[in-house]
Length: 141
Length: 498
Image (cartoon, rainbow over all chains, first blue to last red; front, side, top):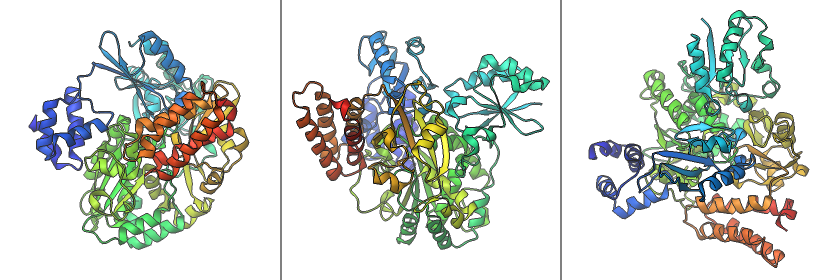
């Protein structure tokens, strides 16, 4: 663990780099890892928790394998992303953000993928999709 | 051997670029990665070499590939192909643009080694001359505030310090904007070269690009270009054999809209919560690690090489002074032909929405356009003849922001949009000041409550008062500008709130 994180201490804003590494490696940042981060970066555990909780990308619970994010920004709203969200929510039977019933996919929102002329935009495990339809998205759930 | 130039932009990826590339490979055609010309509805766009220059096709799908390859090889009746576009530079969307920042994007191969000729030539000049020329050019920050760039540069250069920094704000989070992304994916060297020139002019030896994590393709291209620039000694020690050394790194953000605010960005870059700082001191005097720091957005810095190539006088003659030069506008949302339009300042909103955008994609009547991201005003048809300059937009209570225009048809409910403006502020507020942290929540509740309240007038009055508090008492523009979309919706579309 320390070998993974130690190189980050030489970087500007090193703890953010370290958190990204942990997210890539484990999918979340555990309580034990917070203590290690605090130790390496000479911060209190409270400060580390404060940093982690500030950023949407950092999670402190294990995450499902798949991640589906729907853009909810204004340009996608102009292309009926609200209808897309309603269709997916009615299929899932719960409001987004949520997990699918099988627990394998997180469905959440993202604010702007930079594909604004071709909305609605979604991202499925890092794969970008423009002009997304409900059927298309539901086929991944 | 046929060469295909295939758009590697996120636009193309999101519309099936990979499948097209695989299809072409099975026919023995290798693709050269290029950026996007910014005609978003024609992606994935592909060009083939011909004796008369490149011939473009788009949008291309994987199913189309066999026919397309046949047409290219036989050279017969290429024009009849359904995706045939001919010379893309003569396309009506592109031919009347004035591309300076985006001069290479779409055409230039991402794998070619750049020369940084502008950097080489400015290294022979006095840094002070460069700042003077920047002043002549009248370049203003393209991130939204429109602050004169030369004042920042001069302040950073003149503030005594053991270390100065150049920081690029690549946390482009506004909806309807994608020019930063397209530039970084299509010509990252323009940004890197611009930052190095700024470093030389301001006496800074270190630069950081703060990139939002939603843009992984941009990350890839930036890293590729930076390591190539180091290999070619276009970055690093003694660039071009001069005394000037400049180091550059990319820093990946972690999903926080507020980090597009410059002081919040600096906090984040220092490895802290991205909470804003109280200004003054300005970052140009005391920024990253309390050192003088030049913070500009991507397009401002990427404008620098083309500005010096053109010369300050000529650059300054473009636009409507004091809104000088060109700006890449982005037209998006419910629009037939969306994409990137680089023009000098002074064209009207209507030209962009109607002449370039071609009206709504849904075919329904136009209702409004939001300009400048989530904190920008909703404008009605009556205001479309406003020229796009900082001054004219300010006069109607709006702004250019990052140059993004989002078009809505008549199905939009402006009450919902006003509610969303507050909700967005609630989600993204850094929490440091009360007007933004609490005001956004109360604002959302008030707008939601309008449907059930017995006294709409009193509640709208309350929303207006809340907007005044947020505008005047918030520490930064997040809370300070959230009232802009709300008020514009209330004033221009009052019927939606009844």
